[in-house]
Image 1: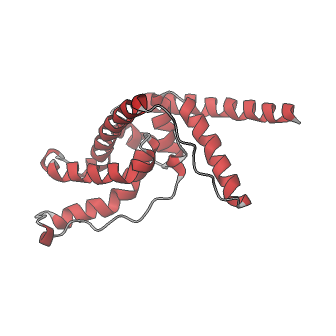
Image 2: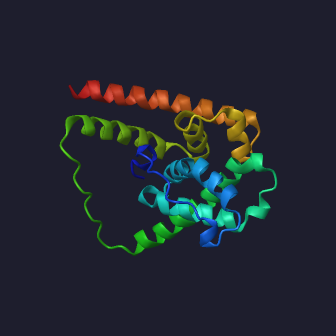
Image 3: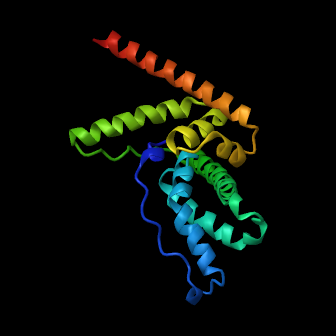
Length: 192
Protein backbone atom coordinates (compact mmCIF):
# COMPACT_ATOMS: atom_id res chain seq x y z
CA UNK A 1 0.00 0.00 0.00
CA UNK A 2 1.36 3.46 -0.86
CA UNK A 3 1.58 6.57 1.30
CA UNK A 4 -1.78 7.62 -0.11
CA UNK A 5 -3.66 7.89 3.21
CA UNK A 6 -1.64 10.99 4.15
CA UNK A 7 -1.46 12.80 0.77
CA UNK A 8 -3.21 16.18 0.38
CA UNK A 9 -6.85 16.18 -0.74
CA UNK A 10 -7.66 18.17 -3.89
CA UNK A 11 -10.60 20.53 -4.17
CA UNK A 12 -13.76 18.73 -5.25
CA UNK A 13 -14.71 19.12 -8.90
CA UNK A 14 -17.91 20.93 -9.78
CA UNK A 15 -21.04 19.13 -8.64
CA UNK A 16 -23.83 18.40 -11.14
CA UNK A 17 -26.33 21.21 -11.67
CA UNK A 18 -29.95 21.30 -12.87
CA UNK A 19 -28.57 22.16 -16.33
CA UNK A 20 -26.73 18.82 -16.24
CA UNK A 21 -30.05 17.06 -15.71
CA UNK A 22 -29.65 16.63 -11.95
CA UNK A 23 -33.08 17.32 -10.43
CA UNK A 24 -31.73 17.04 -6.87
CA UNK A 25 -28.84 19.46 -7.45
CA UNK A 26 -29.10 21.58 -4.25
CA UNK A 27 -29.19 18.55 -1.93
CA UNK A 28 -26.63 16.63 -3.93
CA UNK A 29 -24.26 19.59 -4.23
CA UNK A 30 -24.36 20.11 -0.46
CA UNK A 31 -23.63 16.40 0.14
CA UNK A 32 -20.90 16.40 -2.52
CA UNK A 33 -19.13 19.52 -1.26
CA UNK A 34 -19.54 18.56 2.38
CA UNK A 35 -18.19 15.03 2.10
CA UNK A 36 -15.93 14.86 -0.98
CA UNK A 37 -12.66 15.30 0.96
CA UNK A 38 -13.66 12.67 3.54
CA UNK A 39 -14.60 10.19 0.80
CA UNK A 40 -11.21 10.71 -0.89
CA UNK A 41 -9.41 10.19 2.45
CA UNK A 42 -11.46 7.06 3.18
CA UNK A 43 -10.70 5.75 -0.30
CA UNK A 44 -6.99 6.27 0.23
CA UNK A 45 -7.13 4.69 3.67
CA UNK A 46 -8.93 1.69 2.19
CA UNK A 47 -6.16 1.17 -0.36
CA UNK A 48 -7.36 3.09 -3.42
CA UNK A 49 -4.08 5.04 -3.62
CA UNK A 50 -3.90 7.15 -6.76
CA UNK A 51 -7.38 6.00 -7.74
CA UNK A 52 -8.97 7.61 -4.66
CA UNK A 53 -10.44 10.53 -6.61
CA UNK A 54 -11.93 8.16 -9.19
CA UNK A 55 -13.44 6.09 -6.38
CA UNK A 56 -14.84 9.29 -4.84
CA UNK A 57 -16.52 10.17 -8.13
CA UNK A 58 -18.02 6.69 -8.32
CA UNK A 59 -19.20 6.97 -4.70
CA UNK A 60 -21.14 10.13 -5.49
CA UNK A 61 -22.55 8.69 -8.71
CA UNK A 62 -23.75 5.68 -6.73
CA UNK A 63 -25.08 7.91 -3.95
CA UNK A 64 -27.01 9.99 -6.46
CA UNK A 65 -28.51 6.91 -8.12
CA UNK A 66 -29.48 5.39 -4.77
CA UNK A 67 -30.44 8.57 -2.88
CA UNK A 68 -33.88 7.12 -2.07
CA UNK A 69 -32.18 4.36 -0.03
CA UNK A 70 -30.63 6.86 2.38
CA UNK A 71 -33.66 7.27 4.62
CA UNK A 72 -32.43 9.37 7.57
CA UNK A 73 -30.22 12.25 6.28
CA UNK A 74 -28.24 12.21 9.55
CA UNK A 75 -26.87 8.83 8.44
CA UNK A 76 -25.16 10.26 5.35
CA UNK A 77 -21.56 9.68 6.53
CA UNK A 78 -22.03 5.99 7.41
CA UNK A 79 -23.97 5.50 4.16
CA UNK A 80 -21.22 7.15 2.07
CA UNK A 81 -18.56 5.19 3.99
CA UNK A 82 -20.34 1.92 3.18
CA UNK A 83 -20.45 2.80 -0.52
CA UNK A 84 -16.77 3.83 -0.39
CA UNK A 85 -15.78 0.63 1.37
CA UNK A 86 -17.55 -1.58 -1.20
CA UNK A 87 -16.14 0.31 -4.19
CA UNK A 88 -12.61 0.18 -2.73
CA UNK A 89 -12.94 -3.57 -2.17
CA UNK A 90 -14.00 -3.97 -5.80
CA UNK A 91 -11.05 -1.84 -6.93
CA UNK A 92 -8.61 -3.85 -4.78
CA UNK A 93 -9.87 -7.10 -6.28
CA UNK A 94 -9.47 -5.66 -9.78
CA UNK A 95 -5.98 -4.43 -8.94
CA UNK A 96 -5.04 -7.84 -7.56
CA UNK A 97 -6.17 -9.45 -10.80
CA UNK A 98 -4.18 -6.90 -12.78
CA UNK A 99 -1.06 -7.43 -10.65
CA UNK A 100 -1.35 -11.19 -11.05
CA UNK A 101 -1.11 -10.69 -14.82
CA UNK A 102 1.88 -8.36 -14.64
CA UNK A 103 5.22 -9.94 -15.29
CA UNK A 104 7.58 -7.10 -14.40
CA UNK A 105 7.06 -4.31 -11.90
CA UNK A 106 8.04 -0.79 -12.85
CA UNK A 107 10.41 1.01 -10.46
CA UNK A 108 8.81 3.88 -8.54
CA UNK A 109 9.51 7.41 -9.68
CA UNK A 110 12.18 9.15 -7.58
CA UNK A 111 11.09 11.75 -5.01
CA UNK A 112 12.46 15.30 -5.08
CA UNK A 113 15.68 15.70 -3.12
CA UNK A 114 14.28 18.42 -0.86
CA UNK A 115 15.22 17.45 2.70
CA UNK A 116 11.98 18.55 4.34
CA UNK A 117 9.83 16.78 1.76
CA UNK A 118 12.01 13.67 2.13
CA UNK A 119 11.53 13.64 5.91
CA UNK A 120 7.76 14.02 5.54
CA UNK A 121 7.64 11.24 2.96
CA UNK A 122 9.74 8.99 5.22
CA UNK A 123 7.44 9.70 8.18
CA UNK A 124 4.40 8.99 6.04
CA UNK A 125 6.07 5.78 4.86
CA UNK A 126 6.70 4.67 8.44
CA UNK A 127 3.07 5.34 9.35
CA UNK A 128 1.90 3.53 6.23
CA UNK A 129 4.16 0.57 7.10
CA UNK A 130 2.49 0.44 10.50
CA UNK A 131 -0.98 0.69 8.94
CA UNK A 132 -0.15 -2.03 6.42
CA UNK A 133 0.70 -4.43 9.27
CA UNK A 134 -2.53 -3.80 11.17
CA UNK A 135 -5.38 -6.19 10.50
CA UNK A 136 -8.21 -4.41 8.67
CA UNK A 137 -10.57 -4.21 11.68
CA UNK A 138 -8.00 -2.31 13.78
CA UNK A 139 -6.70 -0.34 10.77
CA UNK A 140 -10.13 1.04 9.85
CA UNK A 141 -10.90 2.11 13.42
CA UNK A 142 -7.42 3.62 13.90
CA UNK A 143 -7.61 5.62 10.65
CA UNK A 144 -11.14 6.87 11.30
CA UNK A 145 -10.36 7.95 14.89
CA UNK A 146 -6.69 8.95 14.86
CA UNK A 147 -6.29 10.29 11.30
CA UNK A 148 -9.83 11.36 10.40
CA UNK A 149 -10.57 12.66 13.90
CA UNK A 150 -13.97 11.00 14.20
CA UNK A 151 -15.33 10.01 17.62
CA UNK A 152 -15.98 6.46 18.75
CA UNK A 153 -19.79 6.52 18.52
CA UNK A 154 -19.67 7.86 14.94
CA UNK A 155 -17.14 5.19 13.95
CA UNK A 156 -19.35 2.56 15.58
CA UNK A 157 -22.30 3.69 13.44
CA UNK A 158 -20.16 3.82 10.29
CA UNK A 159 -18.80 0.30 10.79
CA UNK A 160 -22.06 -1.01 12.27
CA UNK A 161 -20.28 -2.20 15.43
CA UNK A 162 -21.00 -1.86 19.15
CA UNK A 163 -19.08 1.12 20.63
CA UNK A 164 -17.20 -1.21 23.00
CA UNK A 165 -15.79 -3.16 20.07
CA UNK A 166 -14.65 0.07 18.41
CA UNK A 167 -12.86 1.14 21.61
CA UNK A 168 -11.28 -2.31 21.97
CA UNK A 169 -9.99 -2.24 18.38
CA UNK A 170 -8.64 1.27 18.89
CA UNK A 171 -6.87 0.22 22.11
CA UNK A 172 -5.29 -2.76 20.32
CA UNK A 173 -4.17 -0.56 17.42
CA UNK A 174 -2.64 2.02 19.79
CA UNK A 175 -0.80 -0.72 21.68
CA UNK A 176 0.54 -2.10 18.40
CA UNK A 177 1.65 1.39 17.37
CA UNK A 178 3.56 1.79 20.65
CA UNK A 179 5.30 -1.57 20.09
CA UNK A 180 6.01 -0.70 16.44
CA UNK A 181 7.59 2.63 17.42
CA UNK A 182 9.64 0.98 20.19
CA UNK A 183 10.88 -1.76 17.84
CA UNK A 184 11.80 0.81 15.21
CA UNK A 185 13.60 2.92 17.81
CA UNK A 186 15.53 -0.13 19.11
CA UNK A 187 16.46 -1.13 15.54
CA UNK A 188 17.73 2.37 14.78
CA UNK A 189 19.81 2.45 17.98
CA UNK A 190 21.31 -0.92 17.05
CA UNK A 191 22.44 0.42 13.65
CA UNK A 192 24.62 3.14 15.21
